[in-house]
Image (tube, rainbow, N blue to C red; front, side, top):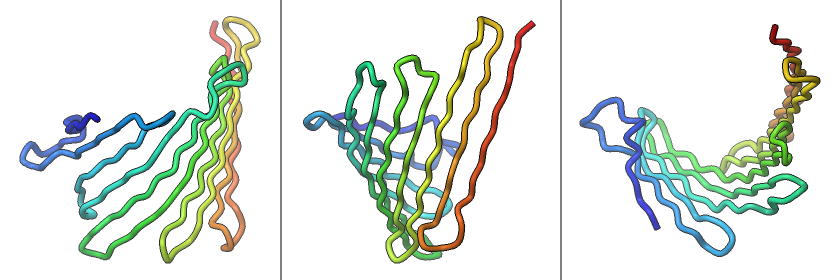
Length: 150
């Protein structure tokens, strides 16, 4: 198990740094972070594992929980996430579900792809969907870029 202080996030040298740790367990990793911010004290812990990493690409799964203790109230949430990249690393997709305890459940999905036509020309496109389950309509986003280097 390793424990480290995240010095890169320190703005004030008198402020204690965030503590992160990780330990290999079975086929995955148990991880955690403890720290503080303007919102109060927080902690995050979870487990992540590569589901497959072969000709189909790489699929990583993650389950986690967070807890924030602050002057304006406390909050807890649970979540799960799947991340996929293809072998060429030119396509990716993500699906994440989070549940705030005594609050809404949120679903986020995104996908993107890059098509290389030649060494100077490419098209990249992607989209996102976000939905608070049981509340209103989802938010959609799409985008595309055509690029040619002269």
